[in-house]
Image (cartoon, rainbow, N blue to C red):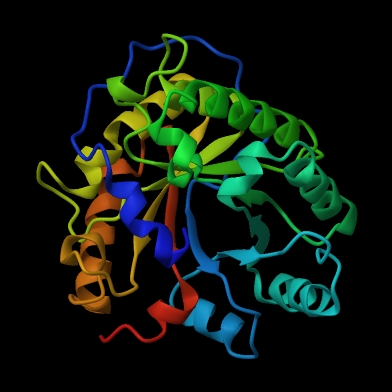
Length: 281
């Protein structure tokens, strides 16, 4: 999630119970349940893979702009990542993609054609658009869900994930009488939950806020990766920036230990490379 969009993620911050379990076919593509991913928004540099190895990162969500999936920098990175045993995933998105008919589908097809990536992550975040706060929200959500479905169908069997805030399962965001979280999960292979908190436990901790997403992902035969933040933010609880790397690892160990055997848990994703490498120990 882009740093300038963090504030928008916070609306609806109270956790609501997940909907009752439903039966669904398993996803056609699975996430590695041990995944420890890192968002990379900047152009990959020569230190990225060594840094990832030192920090136990086995998956990179690398920003791949539309029209650039086969660029030389990504071809070189894919070769080096394969040699290092690190999975390379393509990541892109923008709120306006919710309203654009072909952009996300073209991007997914381009990523697949390149043959360089092991998965796709799309970050659309329709809730930052003006229409989200008006009577136009229902129409916006119809378009958003349609684009997710079509893009996932174009992913060539690669796992296709969508980022979601932790409050998509709250009743106030139901769409057509159903949980918005369920409808996103049904459209894609899995989700990356933006559960930006700096502690694992407690009523406002990572485990509590993401409980509904992990549970519903399991109900639908899919998985939820939990995303945490390391960049500076005005609200301290959203990030490990103040606590530092040692405290972050302690909290993440608690999360992974608690969820290790949960079928809906797909691992951890850290946002993001440039801020993590500046995080104090």
